[in-house]
Length: 364
Ligand code: NAP
Ligand code: G4F
Image 1 (tube, rainbow, N blue to C red):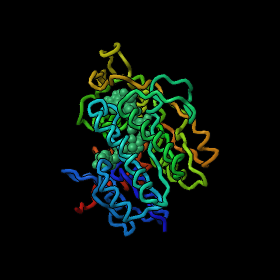
Image 2: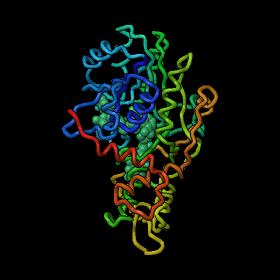
Image 3: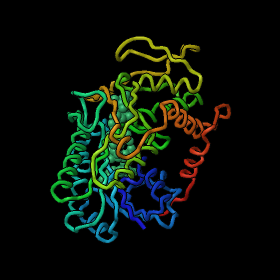
């Protein structure tokens, strides 16, 4: 039986990856960090699985990682834990560097020190490409010019993973993943913030949505498909680094238009800059406002990935379109917001699965 060790299991990707590995009959061991409120709702539906083991742990605590890894002796490690919000990384840069940067080194050091015979996946990010992009679309050879403390921390993790692969012959891979979303996406990332707000507005519970930069563009895929790529990287003969992306990008503005369209609202835009507003064409109500607090000190304007290498070497190909993704997120948010019966709930499988998460009993 293969044994996986996952950090960041309570996050969006951690929950999908755990499902995938349990389906593949892995024994899954994972660290959960202590929190004053239960933070396991994304994995509660899995917690009674006899092959799923959880431990308190933290990427900032080397002794904890050392003890757990030496005891568990996993065959694959997936390092998904991070302070993963780019905007927040400007507020907590040192903590972001500690977790998203040094946390990776701590894991690699345990593998090296204990001669662990295991494969290692590092959750790298397209945010590392940053601002001065010399290639569009971006691939594994594109220069990194990060524009946030988060991007810089992830870049440290990228290179230390390459370094340990070369210096100590570790089977260590970097996934350079472009943005991936789902109904389980954290509510302060822009896609989920939009779908949550649209559902709340149509249900009469919120008046308008406040956003920052509407014109940044992102290459958005579905998290479920992206965790499969993470697993595929560790099943290869040789370790390597791979870009994972859809090859299509849209602006925040386009995403918002599509999400409102999903509930039958046509947005028209008026004004400029901070005074721009998005208005419901039919009722003339202002539904989108700009709030400068959601702008970042430095922005990444455009991310568009070229995943040719992943397609050719891993056989990985995304299937979700942006419209499929928005439909699934909208359906879920409409359902949890108000159980709106007029909406076509043709993706009930995904919704049911998420509701089970919310209803599960918490164990300490
Ligand atoms: P997420 O939902 O924010 O999950 C991050 C997880 O890391 C959470 O479970 C969090 O714990 C945990 N964590 C944070 N600090 C920790 C610490 N000090 N020790 C242990 N665990 C800690 O992120 P995600 O979207 O699933 O992304 C997974 C990974 O991929 C992250 O490393 C992210 O930076 C990277 N990535 C994500 C994307 C994307 O578009 N989603 C793209 C590229 C790369 P709590 O649940 O307790 O907060
Ligand atoms: O949804 P976001 O916060 O994602 P961002 O910054 O692209 O980072 C995500 O993707 C990275 C991969 O490229 C991951 F590594 C990272 O962990 C995370 O998952 O913001 C997307 C865009 C930005 O340009 C931001 O300025 O949306 C813009 N935006 C506009 N208004 C907003 C808002 N972002 C947020 N979070 N909230 C807003 O109100």
